[in-house]
Image 1 (cartoon, rainbow, N blue to C red):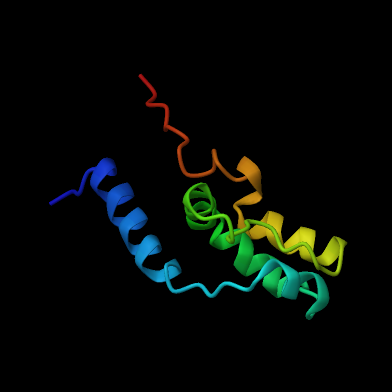
Image 2 (tube, helix red, strand yellow):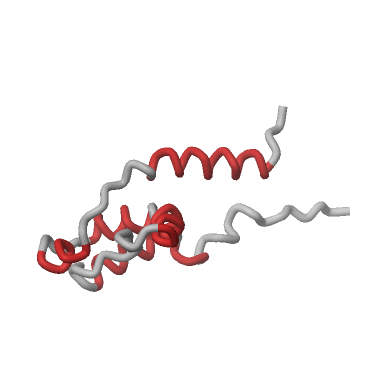
Length: 100
């Protein structure tokens, strides 16, 4: 039995929301004075970007991007974690052409 695409996407969204809703927060002032975030923190922040964005619409103390980061390594991790902004989007959706 095939599960349709809409149900799969809904299931993926529900599962990711459930998993990433446990993400911890840190006050902004602590971000500016606390530890610097590196590549792996950027990767994690990229993964939780959709949840962080929706939460930031309703709460002022939630940010999407860590201000106190290590620079290019954090940016690279964030970009990879957020899905590369569509670089890999078309890989799974190619249609096979039937030969007649």
